[in-house]
Amino acid sequence: MPEHVSAFANWKPKHNPWAVALTVTLATFMEVLDTSIANVALPHIAGSVGASEDEATWVLTSYLVASAVILPISGWLATRFGRKRFYMACVMMFTFCSLLCGLAPTLPILILARVLQGLGGGGLAPSEQAILADTFPTEKRGQAFAVYGMAVVFAPAIGPTLGGWITDNFNWHWIFFINLPVGLLSLWLSNRMVEDPPHLIEQRKASKGLKVDFAGLGLVGIGVGLLEYTLDKGQEKDWFSDIGIRTTFATAIVLIILFVWWEWRHPDPIVDIRLLKNRNFGTAVFLQLILGMVLFGSTVLIPQYLQTLLGYTAQQAGMVLSPAGFVLMFMMMVAGRIVGKVDARALAAFGYFCTAIGVFNLTRLDLLTSFGAATEWRMLQVMALPFIFIPISTLNYVGVPLEKNNQISSLSNFARNIGGSAGTALLTTFIARTSQTHQQSLGAHAVQGSVAYMGYIDRITQLLVMRGLSVAQAGQAAVGEAYRELQLQSTMLSYKNAFVVLAAALFFLAPLPFIMRKPQPRELPSPEAAGH
Image (cartoon, rainbow, N blue to C red; front, top):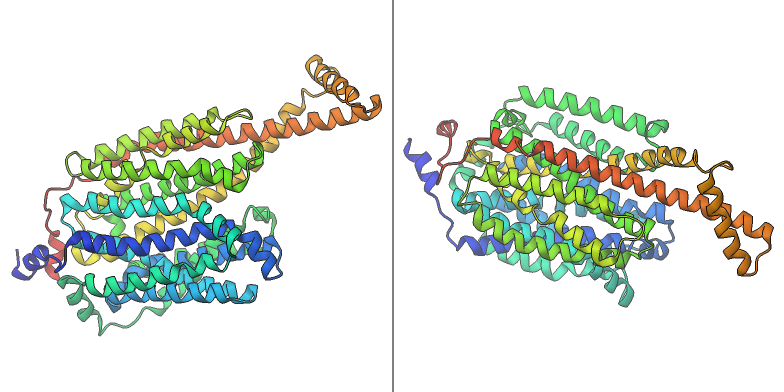
């Protein structure tokens, strides 16, 4: 092996690796917390800036679109300008724009600040994961990603509750202001602890004479932005019945296809699409995409079910989800310790299989489910997720040259986020459409000739007459109550169908990790790195 490649492989950070891990985890916690904390405050934000709740959803959508745009190109930016410099710029931008969000007097200014905040926040996760991959040897990456993963799952667990408390006791501005001290601390620690490894410094020097691929930047930025907008607003606008959604979707697909063709042929691509030819990474990207669909999708479905069908408040629904966050934190530690001792592929397969069982168990939800049962089933559903997240994050980097770590982390995060957006949009549409189908099916039995239906109407009528209504009024109210019950039952069945689909997808994915190559202890860079 060439001497400089060996030196790159044996490089160790100046500071304790765990201090570096905690430093980058701090910014992760801030960014993820801010994403979940803003959801609860939307009605208050709308009232404060004189906007409707529908207009206020742009506070969320603008952030998601901006972070989606920056994700696929963050690896290139980190390599081009230096990963530490890019990472600290993202922390600084996120923190400063949090201040702008808190001070925003009108909705347009708030949305603009959220776009800029999303550009900063979207670049954090890929840089952080690449830093961890370079800081820790192969056999310890699992534990490092476990610490990182704890922040990712703990922040959403407390976000809605903390956001509700801050909004009720202070005002919505403070959900953004609380980022300031955390951001400043993160900047100070990052400046002291984080450093660029030698291979990244050499790569940055080599890239200085290359021209910037402005065509690639434009194609990916506009294409991904339009795709994210389509996924976020599609169900609200009834998908392809709306000319705007048809236009944005068609334009996004054309631009993304052009982008893939352009980048595949470009000597210095913004996104190295050719990395997908690597067996481990190509498989991992697909698995991350589906994991995003299931993880984000189920996180949206459960509180929707509780609020729509069981009448829970947003805070009560958040309390059902919160204990699962603490279970995830504990299981992250367990998975982090195990992943270096067993075959990571087997661990991922086990995680998919157990998560499939946990999701299928959610089909037991009905209109009489108790708070305790819903909380327990949610905990069971997420318990095995660390056995997917940590092994896949570790296997991502097997057989890939060191200098491609930035690209690997940005593409895998992009796949998971797009999967989350697509999963949420598709599941919401699936529930709406299947609910109509179930309503028609059940409605076919709610006719005058049905003994069961007429018996139900008679019982409700008698109860209402006993409460003082006339027979005619009670009869009309009974029919209305029967229709309401029909809608509830139809919606409940559609949610059950959605959980079956998610469980089936996870079950069929369980064998796929074995396509990937098993990492060797202290695996050195692949031969491709010798040319750099």
